[in-house]
Length: 277
Image (cartoon, rainbow, N blue to C red; front, side):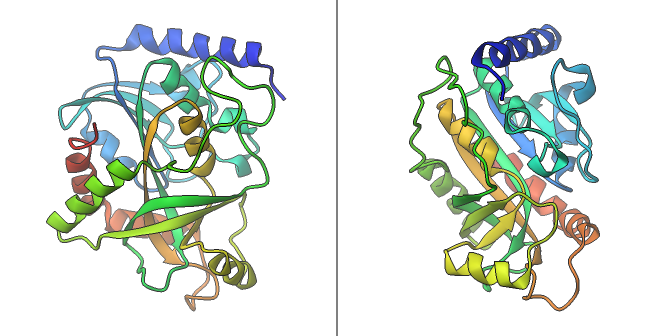
């Protein structure tokens, strides 16, 4: 378990390194999930920093996560984009999984758009649907705020009752209607992975109120809320969960689906970030 002093020192060292390379001051953070990294290619006047060059940054090890931090402008807004994220199942500790969000907070970023690929539990969903995350259930077996509190960044006991900002979700729902997308919301269950869930586990998740399941996002959202950031979450349903679809689950299917809906996703996010105040 890392101390507050050591984690703060690592955050400040990473901040100093990244800040020296900036040409704009980012105001919105974006984390791109499996297969959704194409949005980063549209950042204008980009400064691209491979993760391995940033002090204390983890490195992505999963297919579909290229591992680059990109700053520049997108739809006219200064952004910091993570093209690839880190997962608890990769063997990282929670403070490492959420280190990029801490960096964003230290750099003064006040809003976070987080995306992921998820399995669909709600029978109204179809592969390729974009779902706004309304709430989450943390079943990862840990919490990124465990241990010494970073009192300079947030309170010991943060409130998560509006962890996915209601105002931002309402704007996103309205935009979905304007773009003829299904205006869908759902509850995301975060599990540790890396094995996919069993059919029995999916029945359990449905019983406790989950519409989606995945292996990311929850730690980042907890930390973002701890630091006072507004958050909007978007899941791309890449497959129906175990026991719902007949074929076996695979990461190849995840990548295939995100590539198929990539153009719609990119168009939606480009328009959306203009609305997030």
